[in-house]
Amino acid sequence: MRTLAIDTSLAAGSVAAAAAGRTSEIELPVAGEHARRIATALDDVARGLGWKVADVELVGVVRGPGSFTGLRVGLVTAKAIAWAAGAALVGVSGFEVIARRTARLMEAAPETLHLAYDAGRGELFVAEARPAAHAPVEFGLSTPRLVAAAAWVANLPQGALVSGPGLTVAGVAIAARADLRIAPPEAWRPTASDAADLAIRLHAAGRSDAPAALVPDYLRPTYADESASPPT
Image 1 (spheres, helix red, strand yellow):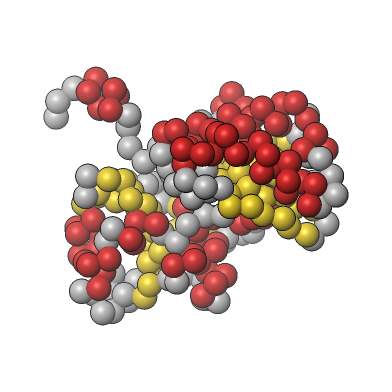
Image 2 (cartoon, rainbow, N blue to C red):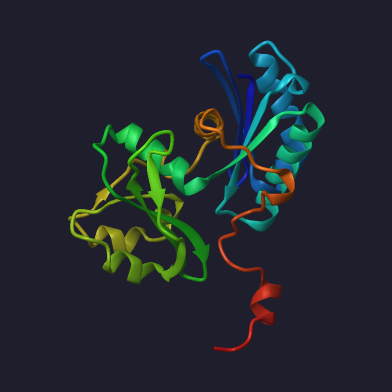
């Protein structure tokens, strides 16, 4: 199945094309350049496999967690391509992509992974990925939550396996926990090629998202939403 995948959830993103066991991937520059570069990059990865963007049959996109601007760029682009090409659309969680990537790179037996994104303000957006009983979803995710970085690290179970882009801001606290197992840095962020693989598996199992129903998973509410919230 000719597949395009997009990840613009973090400052450094990527796009990928996959078909017939082959994958072509291009990294995107910093988030401010995503909107300008994404169309050309998608055309390049598709042509790298001998077809055009208009030939795509499945579009996968990382729906978050991530920044407001980056996720909007990725999701709007994915929806537009899927609509124009008549392709299926599948949104995937960055948490799940990182869980699968971490397990593969570490060649780890199925176990709970503790994942973190940097949410700013000294906080992390975290979730646990626990082995699922059935493929294609190898991990089931807990409900993501905002926590103080130091508190998250302090409350991790003995010997926990940790991964995710939030480790860059929790490094000092993590270094003080010699018992923790830390995934290699190349496992900490999602990639479009991993998102493509997950989207293909989910679509084969019958998953498809309606464009209108696919919305971003932000790291935290917008400032406007936070201001509108009643005091607690």
